[in-house]
Length: 479
Image 1 (cartoon, one colour):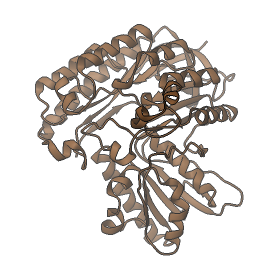
Image 2 (cartoon, helix red, strand yellow):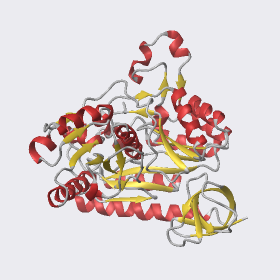
Image 3 (cartoon, one colour):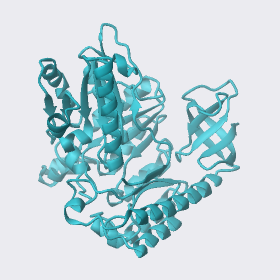
Image 4 (cartoon, one colour):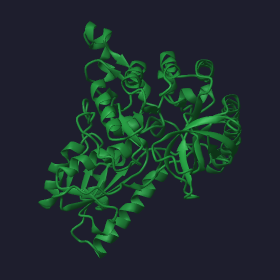
């Protein structure tokens, strides 16, 4: 089993908060694993099932329906989900025989009927593009039949569904802008579980953002497997764009234009986005960030490896040199921009020289934080089919430790640059360590805590002078 490490606050296995719609009598327990897209998808599922008479509950034992929204990106994630399914089934046997159990998301798409035929742990299996079919699938289950829909769509974006904001603090919310991925990185299962890239109508994106503002939300994150690849030309797959009419091509809206549109339509709303691919991060996106104060000065820019040779084997569409050139552009156009990364160590055929190139790239960039993993083979990917997983586990572990240690030093360095400065912080909660302190994030996505004064409240934007920094947090006082 691969080791992994994340230097960043990340929610895993999060059960949604409860809602209570009058007249709804059935209870749904839904738990999400993996990326932010999964969290948002669970909110879409809750909205669909709300119309079918379900209120959500955080008490597993009382649920009529238990759903787990799954991730297939790494082996460890799948193992965690299997353990959760075992727990659900124990509760079903011991306490609630009428409970129905379902698997959603990427793991459902990858394993399909295996859950029903071999493991017999669930009653229904639903892929990421089939959530609108849940009412029909539940009817199948109620009639005593197993139910499955894992058909990937060329059109579905759920743009017509208003998610139930159950996974939110009331301040920040996710807005999905694209689904799927066309990049076909050899290590990644996402194109097979999420399908081809298609973008959502910009009007529906802006309408959802405005609705969130009217409901009191102060920050949105525009989501996509590859957000900066967004391209709206009237609908359809991105790969079909060149076949569109000349008018459609001329009036198409790319990610930079979308950012401008959202930032202009909601000038007081904080805007973030995730995730980006270096190949699609064009200079006009950087200028859009620089030109709008409400677009946060933070870019998550996965590099995966510092070796051009390994990047080519990964089918990443950039070289080490091109990535460094992009970093230099970011530093020039947005001097105060924070940058984070994804790095996979121990990919097929990775040598010590390749590893040292990754470490030297980290030294060049000095990332603010990152997501770091040892490579684990994912069934169905090109790497699993054609490349030997030939780096010994002990070597992977040692290299991962070296990467983690370097990132910890760089994170500390970046946080210390804020000491003595005043930053704008969006209050999104109370400090977990001290109820007398607020917690929030600055534009660069750094966590900031400061004492309550009694004059501020959740959702306020306040100015905080930073006095010191711990390994992962800025500590200051409101001014």
